[in-house]
Each structure stands twice: as C-alpha cells, then as structure tokens.
Image 1 (cartoon, helix red, strand yellow):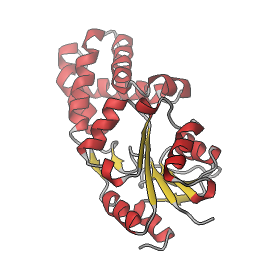
Image 2 (cartoon, one colour):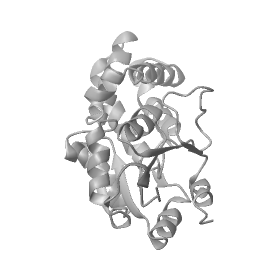
Image 3 (cartoon, one colour):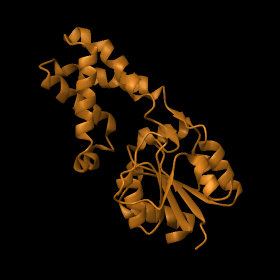
Image 4 (tube, helix red, strand yellow):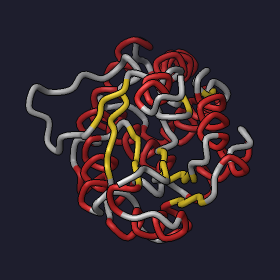
Length: 238
C-alpha cells in the first residue's frame, strides 16, 4: 500500500531535548550543593542515578509523564532525603534545572527541511507527543511547529498518550490514512514503535547517533534511521 501519511514524535526526534540535560543538572547542583553541605558532583550523580532508575518503571512513566516537572521535584526530594539533606530545597533545584535546560532546547538541523520536503512531496503529516499539555504546547509554539502538521496530538490535551492505540488511530483518522499507508517515527521503542505497530501503522525508530538498538529489539521497528536524512533517502526524496 502506498504511503500517504507520516507521523512524528517530537522530543528527541524533531526537537533536541536531551542535548542540554547534563549541563543543566550540573548548573543546578553547583548552585545548591555548597549550601546543602555536599559536593556538586556527588549531588549531580545521585540525582541522575535516582531519575534513571525511576523512569525505568513503566507504571511510573504512565503516572508522571503528564506532570514532568513535578516528577523532577519528587525525584530530587527522594535524592536529598536519601543523602540526609534538606529536602525542602528540591523544588528550587528542579526549577533551576528546568530554566537551564529549557533554554538549551533546539530543533535538530534536519527537522524543518525534512518536513518541508515531505509536504512538498504530498505527504500528510502528524505530530504525536506525550507529556503535559502546557509544556508540550509551549515547545510547539516556541519552534513554530503547528503550521508544519495536519494534526497535532498532545497527550495532556487528548487524554491518552503513546502507546495507547487511540492516539495513533485518531491521528490516522485526521490524516485520512490507515494501516500500511501511515508511518510513525520516534525514538522510544515502547511508546513509539510498539504503539504504532499495535495500531497497524508502519514504525521507524530514529536513534540520532545516541541510542543503541538491541540485537533482538522488542518491539522491532520496520525501519531504522540515524537521522531524518535517512528518511528522505528511504523515500527517494534525497
């Protein structure tokens, strides 16, 4: 079946949201660690370790992903308490982190050019993103992404998030494309690849030279791209 529609994840697919994370946590911990009586590096390591373990739990992801900043505060509180430090500083640390990290957000260099090329070629485009309505809408507005898409589905607005099949089914309905005529591209195997395939779509995993694919990934993507130039090459649009 001829491909008619292409949907994209936003964070770490179109928008580089991980590139400034390490630097932002470093700035936040350097600002508060001395007053708490701990070395910045030790606090940074403890917070990052706590958050990495926390987000491995899919139940936690499901519960907290529409309240991402509150999840940061929660994890910093757990970290501070575990270190015997004043947990009341958690919100200020999390706020400082977000101020630093949000200022570092940027579109990947190939994002807008790829979307323009696809639209020119006649593809209908969708954006499907998990997360809080206000935060995700702010990103979309900041980078003027709304006009690039025929449909935008935000978990916090729609009421369901990936991998729930209703998210993908809604997007396909709005794009007038079903099953093999629709492709979804994202960086998360569970939410993006698993969700899209369960809804009958084709699914492409994008790693942005940061992620490694297991030898036997589950679920397995139909296509693997390092970047969006690979997508254009795959479609014969390079």
